[in-house]
Length: 161
Image 1 (cartoon, rainbow, N blue to C red):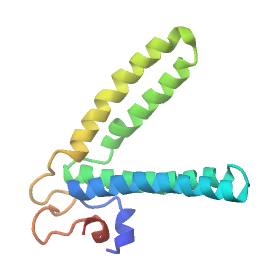
Image 2: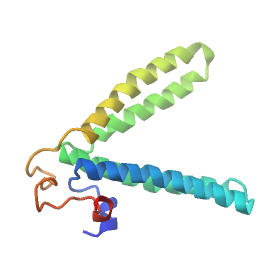
Image 3: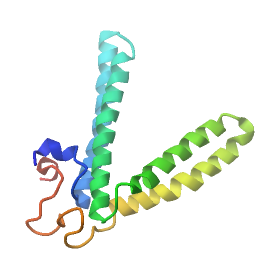
Image 4: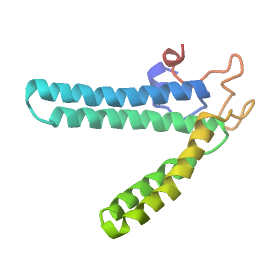
């Protein structure tokens, strides 16, 4: 499989090291896109349009690649990508709900409580599940074990060499 195509693939498995390299690279690319956009906006005096477009481009590409890597990491754990709804969806809904409630001063403490109850435990669980625990040993329904010798890792070779 082509190295770039692997970044955008939701199929197969990925080992922990490759997962972390992809995640750090995605965060760095989002920051770089935002910074370059802001720099172009400052140099051309066009306003925030370059910065906003850089951020949007970085977020779209970065989040897509990050979700693809997270899916393949779940596959390595022999879990469906539907687990991302639990790990990503519910915390984001909790954050949005907390922000909306936090706009009203009398509900600010309740908003913080909702955010803590939904975001923190699920984020810790996702961190452990995706980034710490070893994948299933041997082949599973999503492919070969990427840690076995000779088994192809679905992460780009350029990112893990």
